[in-house]
Image (cartoon, rainbow, N blue to C red):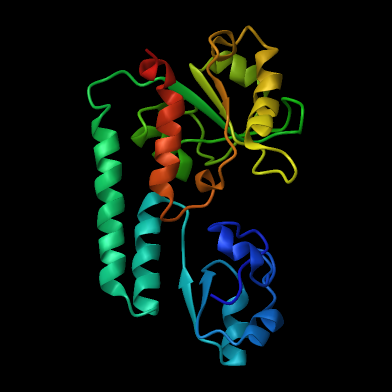
Length: 242
C-alpha cells in the first residue's frame, strides 16, 4: 500500500501513508508519483481515463449495498490475484451476518430512526436512513425495523416534526464521525444531548438515544460485520442488561 484517500483512517497504519485526494476528486498526478502497481477506484469517479492515459493499472469497484460489498471483494480479489481469499472472506462475512440475523427471527423488532447528518448542536437539516439503503439493510440484520418506510429516497432530509410523528423506539445519531481532539465518549454525549431535550420522544424518555461515531457504519466494506455488531449492541441494550 503506497497511498490512500484523504479520508482513509482504518487500519491505523494508513494514517502515515501519502494522501492522494478526496473520494470525488482524487489527484492523478499524486497517484502517478507513487508509481503504484494497481489503483482501486470507485466506478462513479472520472479517474479511469486519466489513469489509462498515464499507463497506470486500475480496478473499478462499486459499493452502496450489501450485495455490492460482496461483488467488490470478488473484484478486488481478482485484480490482486487472490480470488480464493476473496471467496473465503465473503463466505465468512455471510456466515457471521446470517448468524446474527437468525438471533432475531420470530422476535419483535424495535423501530429505529438513524440519523447521518444534521446541523451541529441542533436538530435541523436532519438526514436520515431511508428504506432500501445500505444502513437500512444492516439495521434489519441487527434486529431492528427502520422507522422510515414511506420514502423512495435512500437518505432523505426530514424535520424534527417528522421524528416526533414517527416516535421511534430508538434513535441512532451518527452525524459526527470521529471529530479530531475529542474522545469517543465525549462525541457520543454531544450527539445524544439535543435529543434528550425532547421528552415528547419515547426514545428520549426511555434513554434509548445513542451517539455512534465509528466509520465502519458509513464505509461499506469488510467491516460490515463490525457495523452490524455495533448496531445490535445498541438496539438490544436493554435485553442484555441483568
